[in-house]
Length: 114
Length: 114
Image (tube, rainbow over all chains, first blue to last red; front, side):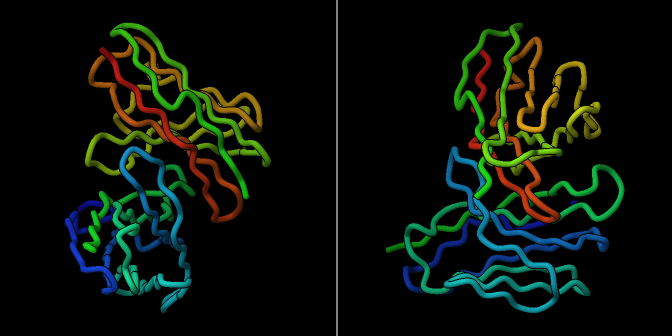
């Protein structure tokens, strides 16, 4: 089982709609969860971090975490064409190996159509 | 905010030669640096974790004699790809911990081996 799984997409939504991105993880010891946005050929940039069960809102972005289900999601409201990118879910490695490093999913490619 | 400067951004080298990639923390001390590799349409894969003043910890399957990591100071970590081959062509990204749960990424290095 892969450590962090995401639907690779592409996910296509019209401008102004809500984009919903999902991620599941396998390490129950993980405590920190991150969503990064990556444009083609560029380094990832942090969108949201979440550590507790429930919702966390920041502007048009809402992260949701359910540790019991090992599930984390990102909602983007009022999607804009500039949101078109690949969204990477990252989870810290809770135990074993190199603790503290991030394990990334393959990413979901989002396309927002004008 | 914390900034990691990564150089070069792009490099083309001949097969069999070595390439050094540098990551510098500009306004903080990076005691831990993570090195990732990303192939086209794939996610970031952790290669190794380096701590200042000690040997790097490599992930399973990563050849430590081929990918030399030096973290001799709190502001500089380097990755040297030795005897590079076309299959080493990839996007290499460094990431530093900036706090208990904070991570900041370099801008990445696109390596092409011809």
